[in-house]
Length: 202
DNA sequence: CAAGTGATTTACT
DNA sequence: GTAAATCACTTGC
Image 1 (tube, rainbow, N blue to C red):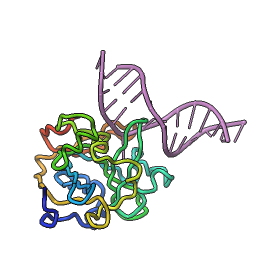
Image 2 (cartoon, helix red, strand yellow):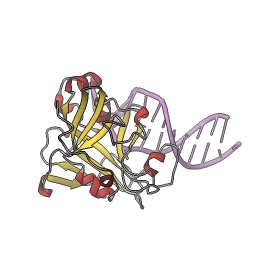
Image 3 (tube, rainbow, N blue to C red):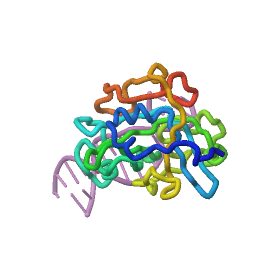
């Protein structure tokens, strides 16, 4: 097990930066969920997409605040979880300051800890596929609507926290257009680690 | 490639 | 209120 007292937590100010920068810098960070004392799920984030506060029609917050998107208008550093296509949850990290309406979608990650538990949640054995899409990532971590609004400043005061883990140079990161959306899909707001086995859609 | 699946939003009475 | 359209996905042909 990793010693979480010896690796550096991501602080509040990180999430208050520009959404596009947070999306880029999240690549290589460790996403951790505490499920009980001494039992953790963790994965290294490898693929993200930014959803911007101003004029981004693909962003759920683009048309103003609604019951669903209200977490996006909170101060950065909480989860925004929504249900999509009748089957899947998507996990987003809220960014920037309260009132902005912005977030970063976690699209893929490399499992690090709690792999057997993730296999159970996902009902598959292939480690490379445990977190290789936004719906799969959420399922591997057991994330659902109950996790909406959850703080990312655990491990003491919530179940979730992010930590510094790997750093990658810009030439190891691919920046390209977002996928699976109908509007503004030409904007280069998707980031992922080059040549990773843990990402399904290149 | 298409289907499955259901919450949310929007556009109407 | 009610109905229709929408949807930042995954899996299996």
